[in-house]
Image: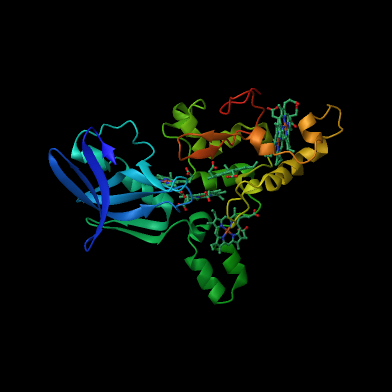
Length: 285
Ligand code: HEC
Ligand code: HEC
Ligand code: HEC
Ligand code: HEC
Ligand code: HEC
Ligand code: HEC
């Protein structure tokens, strides 16, 4: 990929591992890439060690939709005129690890040790050593007590569990500008705005049952979730909207519109509402 005028950025696999290399008029810079982030369902971003204690997020990521390389989200507007700028950025890269791995993370001078790469049981249920020890002793009451149980949590509490990683946009409340398309990737604050949420029964697991893959392009599955609550409304004092009485509509298509943030990435707007015209960010009501 060409960056900052005439700087070429590429990846090379050699005996010493995978390197990201920037080359241009002023020479060449090669950074060893040590970690790959993302399940790959949308994309993968590589992270490397630039120098002692300095981690680098590559400026170039792999995108699944197009099976191609392009600029990493968040780096589109950074300068890229030096070799160092062209390979990536070093701000806050340590923070990637706790969200994309399970258990404690320790940063050494040359390497990062994670208990388990990826999001596994203990990322949601908390530390489980005492629980598994109790289970091995067949002490069922203790085993039940010594694990964080998630069934039966309120929507708000479960949102917090998921929200540890599916966090609000950077900048807190102030950063929460619903007119910014990229913010749609941070689901909890959007869901919380929905009138459906105010009912107190809606949570992430209503539509994303625990331990299951994300249901993609499955209008019927999501319609069943909506109708679980909205069915009862039909025929009550207020006349039902026509969308509820017609058979088989794709509810989320209209009420949770897809928001395209780049040619490779689309996120679903989790602010459930009535949208007008082409507007997909803020409901008209
Ligand atoms: C606060 C937690 C958090 C931090 C910090 C974080 N991520 Fe993520 N990341 C997530 C979550 C949650 C998702 C899934 C939702 C989404 O796509 O935004 C994700 C998605 C991704 C994906 C797409 C994954 C896929 O399945 O296709 C990549 C790649 C990625 N992150 C890389 C990084 C890198 C590199 C960093 C550090 C610069 C980083 N993330 C920092 C939580 C985090
Ligand atoms: C992304 C978060 C997440 C991960 C990862 C996860 N779980 Fe769960 N788990 C949940 C949620 C949420 C519930 C509650 C389900 C419900 O309300 O129906 C749950 C429920 C359970 C329950 C029923 C008891 C309870 O807590 O309500 C067991 C047992 C369980 N999970 C085991 C596991 C095991 C074993 C793994 C790893 C293989 C795992 N979970 C990974 C989120 C997760
Ligand atoms: C430890 C951090 C963490 C927690 C806690 C967490 N997630 Fe995630 N989640 C991620 C990351 C990171 C990804 C991106 C995929 C990947 O790299 O594994 C993701 C991806 C997803 C996806 C998209 C999967 C896909 O195929 O695109 C859904 C849906 C999801 N999470 C739902 C939840 C729900 C619901 C909860 C709470 C019960 C939860 N997550 C808790 C980190 C987390
Ligand atoms: C856990 C129950 C629950 C689920 C699931 C649910 N809703 Fe709702 N929804 C509500 C409640 C409660 C309200 C507010 C009272 C009302 O207007 O009926 C509401 C309101 C709405 C509104 C009116 C919004 C407004 O601003 O006037 C729309 C549109 C809507 N829901 C669509 C959906 C769609 C589409 C789905 C599925 C993707 C869904 N709901 C899933 C409970 C739910
Ligand atoms: C009312 C249903 C509903 C609820 C509740 C819900 N989601 Fe989703 N979610 C969806 C739909 C629909 C999609 C898009 C599925 C597809 O790709 O076809 C989606 C997609 C996602 C994705 C993949 C990225 C994207 O935007 O397409 C993540 C991550 C995610 N949801 C996280 C969450 C989290 C975290 C919560 C709780 C704060 C949550 N969702 C609550 C319906 C819901
Ligand atoms: C073609 C787009 C479209 C589809 C598909 C659609 N809706 Fe709607 N819906 C609307 C519009 C527009 C309104 C507001 C106008 C109205 O009330 O008729 C609305 C209103 C609503 C309301 C608010 C009613 C009120 O005034 O309190 C609910 C709840 C709702 N829809 C749920 C659903 C559910 C559930 C589905 C799937 C079975 C669905 N919608 C499918 C466009 C759609």
